[in-house]
Image (cartoon, rainbow, N blue to C red):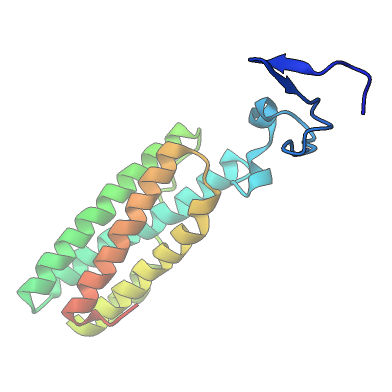
Length: 184
């Protein structure tokens, strides 16, 4: 016990923190007001904009390939429902190309002009069902990359856009699978 007098609060005696059984010592190394100074990579975020731009360009190339593939598949699809679905999936792919290009520029990068290698492989596939299945495998590749990246993206605006992209890709996979494109 210390020799200091007990503090008063509204007429009740208050024990010093070291004597109060209700006080838990946390032993924080630094005050929370310094959290803004911690490198986001410490928490698993992308360590710098350069790596983030690289990821976005990889996704952009895949989306650009998706635009070309859905246009080619849609033009040759025998089933009207498949043609409609492929046109709408292609519009989603184009929308995400624009979104990714905006984010690359916002982060100070240069958007890739390349198209993913998926195009050549996809155009070699024939028949509506095999094509929808192959398209779903490409969409699944994008979904996997997004699921890996999203927990590491601290930028709120980019995170929201990529989460939307993930949701749309998952819905498009289900839609194509319902048309005979297999489950992924």
